[in-house]
Length: 499
Ligand code: NAD
Image (cartoon, rainbow, N blue to C red; front, side, top):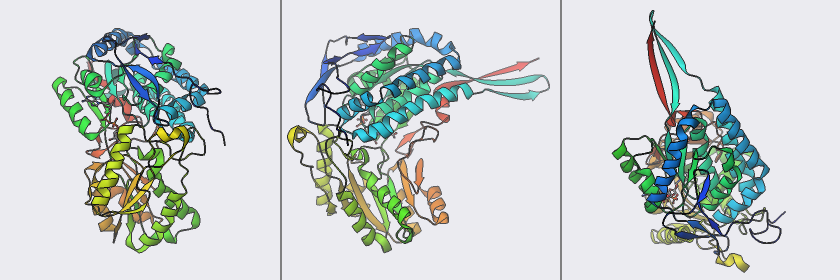
């Protein structure tokens, strides 16, 4: 299987620039304060580029550009905007491997995921919203013989978006595609750990949009994120990140009374009922595979199935099988298409996971496999690799309750259906959940009773554009993807007209 060359080396499909600026008003724009920050790759730990360190002054410039562009963009026809979104999708498709190399190198994720999932999904979101905006219709109601009520949509105007580092391109596109489709101008701040792949993306398609419709300001949370989220000149803030940061975003937004979408953390239960072991080989195989998805994207997934709940009667046998499967996961160079688990996105994240591995041991949880750094050789030795780890313990432990955001699953058992639901819902979070059972009654009831915005039944980790995604409880407010996302980015105008 192919190993893609490292960016900047011979044969590589992509070479990063030495330095990236902000993208404001259609131009690559130096930061007002003239400062830059280093961007290391988690694959080897080496710095591969530097990026503009934006501040409130850059946010104001971006908002100037966005406000100048918003009125005309908002008046373009849905067909015109849809055409542009489809052309963006075409460019991405033509550059799939280049984008995959950029994203894998910057984030540490396996390139097979970038090629098969992250980038194709991002492309599909542009296409989905291009279609959706052309299909959107207003409504008309007859109030009485003389009066009708028209309802139609208007863009909000200028919106702010702030994203995390775990799926840089996909998280950007989840937000950009619906916001642009309905006719908003956007100022987006990428995560400081992974700005470059988004800038590579904007290099590819930035010229397709009128100047000022899309603006990217790079930088850190308090320096660039807060001046954006608390700004009086935005009509909405959409945020994806940690629950603690989400609380701050809500406070900022309350000052200006603007709508928010918050996509926050999770601690998702993945529940295996006893009939799984009695099912046919294909189903059991799928369920075991569903368990090991805790290590997908190095566990840096908001819906990571990080708490596995096993029915007592099958726990020992099931665990024996999934430990063996976990031990056969191929970990290593993210640019190798055989690799299933790559590097954690940053040294900070690596250290955070290490501290949770210590906490788990101190709490008395049993390590069934993994439990430490994954040793690599050659230049990968400088990267941030963690062994896929299975802990067995109790749902009250910190490792069961706090988001680790690494390739770590905590396993506990349940006696019956009621016990499973109690344990599944005994968490601050409510983002995702998995249910595995051939018994339709059990599976549907669990889908109903679990307090989470997305419950995968007999599958896990699919993210189609046309399925709504979002959190219950401390996992967020609002939904992303799906048609309902359009409503999060537009006003409904009502005209009450009498003859
Ligand atoms: P984070 O909250 O630390 O940072 C997210 C973004 O917010 C970054 O761009 C950061 O610079 C910015 N930021 C930080 N402080 C800010 C402030 N005070 N004001 C404005 N902006 C600020 O989160 P992270 O570590 O980058 O991402 C991991 C988290 O994201 C996890 O909790 C994960 O579950 C969550 N996540 C959720 C979803 C979802 O859809 N629910 C998807 C992906 C990730």
